[in-house]
Length: 509
Image 1 (spheres, rainbow, N blue to C red):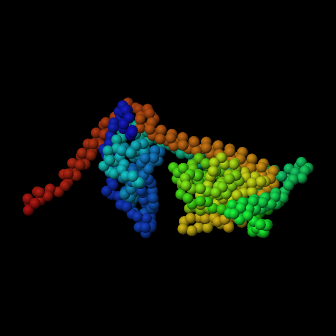
Image 2: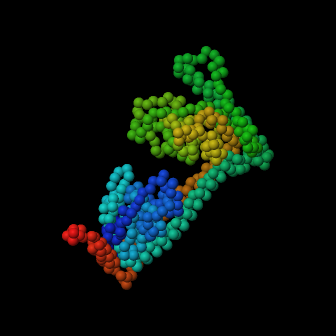
Image 3: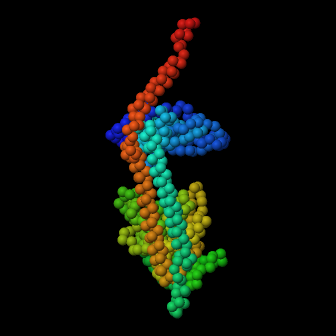
């Protein structure tokens, strides 16, 4: 529904777009980017939704309204398809060029065109197009000229306040992001909660340093490997006759601490290879939402250090995965390949025993963390920290537009390990603070959505005659419309009279 479909306001008129503008599309000249690169200049070059470059010459030198012809978000409410330009400009053939008649403010027309529902006027599927003929038939409302100016002033004033509010919300978003990173950074540096060493001294007691914890982890790591290997051999019908098979155990890579920063008292460094007793890649089976097989965890299921299980895809029913290849408690899933460097290595820990069976996709890596006594919440904290992000991004390989991180690289990643009790306190404090960040972010997002809706509501009220009061002393819009029509008729008659009379010229010969 367009503004003109509403009940008309007294002194207002309905008009078609083609009646109140001159279309200057014939004067457009498209220039591709390669040619523009050879014509550097200071003249703005405009396209469907805004400026797309610069050029050395101009086609127009006046205030004009540009309305997307193709490539504009016609069916996305809240996204502008029309904008105002002033001064020297060059316009390509992706935007209609409109000059308002009768001194109608360009901003008034622009605001109204951003309220139109374009579905009846556009055509195409993958790339919508607004041809000139249906564009001219777009119905609009035409208030008195003075009221048009008052509407523009009111909308401008309200939009200025909205823009300031949105800018403030953007600053809040940025600050929340920085604060989140600061919380995680403080946690992995031992500055978020009192260290176990500090508390032990204050309370006059001993404590278990992380080095002792790490030794227990390594013992448990070997035990789990032996248990898994023995089960595998028995399943293959080749039970061992002695213990020589245990010699196949590969000791994990130890951290190279020479280039690592000093840790708080009682902490130690441990590599991913040390705290994970198994690692591997996932399945390449094709997944779909409408399959009825096993659920397969993918990149979209990794969100902010946790597994989001709301949007799942499934393997075909015939697909069967052995239990060892399923995702279980203590598994850390990591993104190993993606077109975005910021996504590489992003991970999520399965912190609770899953109630369903899940496989995982081949573009993920699974590290099976030694679950006891490693605190899984601490692993999630470390993995989201700026320290781990910087380490992974600096070592991600790039090929054919894709970034990759391999197991061989990941196993060398050294992570800070506090005493177990300190892990728990720190993880709880991180959870508390990040829950505040999350709720603030949700409130911020809601406010941003409301501001966009309010922007659309302001335009709706403006073109329903509800934003400002009408003045009965204003010249009615019907007079303005008649003046525009008369001027159009006079211009057309003048052009016709200037047209050469070819028949008379032939007779004179």
